[in-house]
Image (cartoon, rainbow, N blue to C red; front, side, top):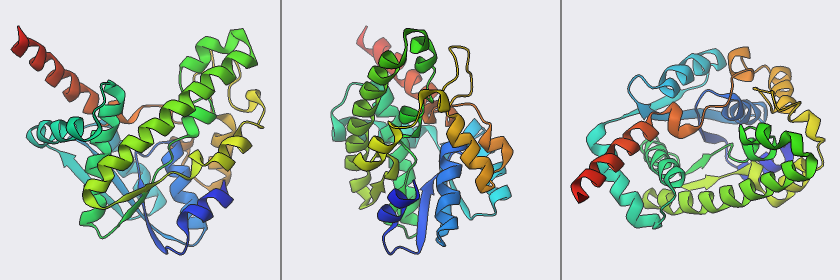
Length: 249
């Protein structure tokens, strides 16, 4: 992981990390600090959302500068339409992630950053999603098939996010989705990632790494909560969808 991160960082001494306060983004931020980079955390979400509250707790424990943007309902709907035109995609989760990263990259630009690092890829490669529990009983081949599909989907999503980020002249770097890291992660035994179909935590090897690195325990043991849910973006996306459906009646 460290080698891929070094490649992504290059000569940059100050870096911005898309941050929810959860396991993956906390590990990424701590790794950057351990590589002697100055780290600024970036969080977006609606007021009172899980990510806005939890990220502040973890950022204060990590002692990193933390920049936040509280999304307003009117700007959300205005920018959602921009995102729809920009990426021409009908997949709801992709649109929700892209609107989140539109706000992240704008926040980065406002704070003098042209690059944002993201921990995307960890959930796909280390069985972070509940779907891995559902296929566990069918064996390794089914888990690997699901993993392959999820990686392809995530690589497509990151291309869409890159289009959105370019609106602000910001580059998104994803060290855990490099071809080299994907190949490495695929050599790690499945039982280091998921233990059973009842495994509610998963990503065990990443959680051990987090504790060894000094990531706060609340973050290291935090169950998966997708960005669009933790930020409340999904809630407002669905509200807009229902409104549009009523308008068509």
